[in-house]
Amino acid sequence: MDRLPADPARILIVDDDPALREGLAETVGDLGHTPVLAASGAEALARVAADPGIAAVLLDLRMPGDLDGMAVLQRLRAGPLPPPVAVLTAYASAENTIEAMRLGAYDHLTKPVGRAELAGLIGGMLALSASGVADAAVPAAPSSLIGSSEAMRRVQKAVGLAADSDATVLLQGETGTGKEVAARTLHAHGRRRNRPFVPVNCAAIPADLLESELFGHLRGAFTGAIQDRPGAFREADGGTLFLDEIGDMPPSMQAKILRALQERVVTPVGGRPAPVNVRVVAATHRDLPRLVAEGGFRQDLFYRLNVVPITLPPLRERLADILALAEHFLCASGAGPKRLGAEAAAALMRHPWPGNVRELRNVIERAAVLARGAVIGASDLGLSGLALPGEVPGSDTVLPAWLDGDLPGAVARLEAAMIRRALRESGGNRARAAKSLGIQRQLLYAKIERYGLRDGEVSENPTEDVANPDGRSFL
Image 1 (tube, one colour):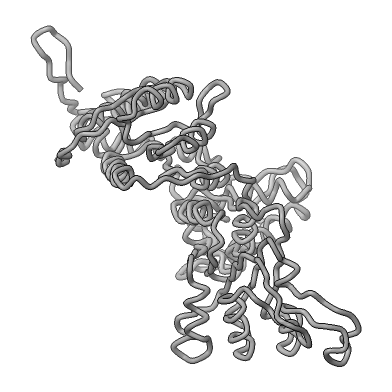
Image 2 (tube, rainbow, N blue to C red; image 1 turned 120 degrees about the vertical axis):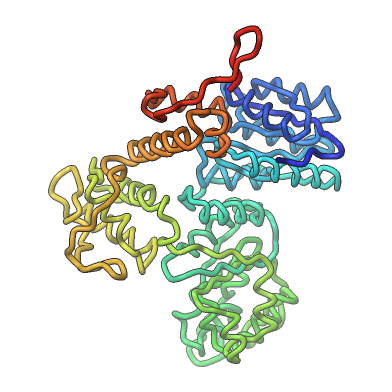
């Protein structure tokens, strides 16, 4: 049982769906707080303006009219001492997650939100509200960080929070996980987005040329220097410098990079020190702490780079994103109106993806070119030679039945199965079933109706509703 707070707070709930609004209000009330309801963005802004006692806001993203959740968030955050705002949506995307965090949202959650998660969310917002911390932000640009998995949403939120900062970001992750995409997204969503983004691959440039590549040189500074060159730091002035594969940087250059990061001053070969205004984003697939321990990377440089660490998850930990990424790459291939068949989708889900997102993109682009028909089959993917650990190549792997067909259908079948099990285990009591599923009762009722579930299907011995003297039942 939740412990009620010593000081109840007024929580504004903004949602155009009456059932979801009332469900959230019931949970907020159960947690010991006072729910304040608004059915539209305009009503929400009016309530906040009229009620300075509102301590936190739970805000739906999609609402009718000119004021959707993002517009309401922006207006709320622009006011004096705005309350913390958590965005709740059934339609989470990389773009709206990053933009919400950048606009100052406390968090961005996907509906349905469980009771324990809601309690923790409100507790965190109230603690922030009590501290009096407030931030301002400006709109963001589109993102390419595709994914709705929990691992990827953590990355999107971190990118949104760090986008406007000048702090150095260190992107870590296996080869092919999308570190450069993340770096470009940081730049595109930040206040420097109208200035240059300059990428430098530290592993691809010979050691004797890297200093000139980064810091520039004057004409005649060395053999072959026939003209002045500004170097990547000065080319990125006002913008973002992306140092890719910095873990492979030669030791001789590490001290010079450290000085440039500390002092924001670069010295061209054969020239004089010059100040630069750049935001540095570094990336590596190497284990930098291990390299530091082995003496292969400077400890002081590691600490200077590791101000805002963001780790890109491998694709094998992002199963929920595989088909969405595949569809994105298929649309981007320009190969015409082609789609993934059910067998191809199942094969993509089985594959271990040692090359991560880069490998997936190459597989889809190849299949889009070579597939003869409009539907891409498993054989068009060219994955038959690779198997999961412990799996015999070429063997038939039996997949759960709910994985057949398209993705929305599979999700619906899984939801229906979980609801049936919860209702059976609760003896047909829908209130207990909703609690075990971590959703509000109204949402459970809606899903039971949507999937056409009946008491006879979900429980052999459904419990009777508890009646009160006037004949109404409680559930």
